[in-house]
Amino acid sequence: MKIAIDIRNIGKGRTGDEVVFFELVKNLAQIDIDIDYRLLIDKRENDVIEKIKKQLGILNKNNFTIVQLGSGNKFVWNGWRVARYCMEEKIDIYHTQYIIPFFMPVHTKIVTHIHDVSFHVHKELISKKDAFFLNKLIPRALNKSDKIIAVSQFTKDEIIKYYNVAPEKISVVYNAVNIKKSGQDYDVIQKKYNLPEKYILALGTMQPRKNIPFLIEAFAQLVKDVDDVDLVLVGGQSHNFDSNIEQIIDKYSKLKEKIIFTGYVDEEDKFDIFAKAQVFAFPSLYEGFGVPILEAFETNTVVVASDIPSHREIGANGVLYFDVCNVDQCTRVLYDALVNDSIREGVLIVAQMQKEKFSWHTSAIKLQLVYKSL
Image (cartoon, rainbow, N blue to C red):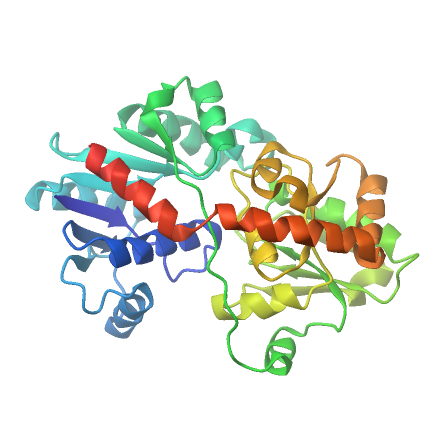
């Protein structure tokens, strides 16, 4: 069996979806010696390709091959190059995310990974251009796919609810984490990202659905009672950057020195950044899974998160929740997470049990079973 997997996001700092495909491929390489995997990528320098091979652990894996299909417009790559490759190489299964090629040979089965459907639920939070393409292309992808991978039961339910997809067509393959200490002194990392001594951490793309202005509002109230803590915001400014972030910081101009933007951080530095945080705050309006919750669990960091279904599914009672519309409540929960030792200790104990339910090894086995079912 020949399986082609779109891994273009690996190495591009796309945070969540990059990590998911990286870890699934890495773990497939550890368990599978029979299936012929073709890892499709756009044009990269040879040293970058070798680095990716090493990171994935496929340098000596004869059944894993990285294939460069050229660069150029992503629609050309997705619409023409992939289809042509699958035709010429007689690929049995093509695994991608969200958007599938416009034309595919009939012998190639399509597996589509869906991380969430926030673009449908919160249309007001994305640009009209993005909304137009997603509203046209996502329904087609879900209809044409032979199998759909949802990252949580919540995401599966949402796909069924909004796109009327048959439940048996969707398989749940949970995300997990693989976050480890870098081995370097924290002082180096602290200086690299200008980290303060005591801080609340928030991490993710600075898109509107991440609800960062809400967190800043709560933080502005919090520092009236706890003035020795700062707010560290980790993540790149994506094309859908929430302009309200800058406006809310201007509103609380006295807080400018207490809010640190690190930009995108190297994966090997994340463990220490999480571990040194007093609290990890995750105020998202909508998530399909919420990998950062598990990253915080892994580093024994207290999690304060918005009370939404996917967070409940992943975090259970190992998280302190707040109403996503109630700034005052969020402030109180943050305060308790910072100063109440009994509350902190209680959720950390539960979090350590909850994290054992998720592993990339188990998820790779489930994905392999999906492939074989086709």
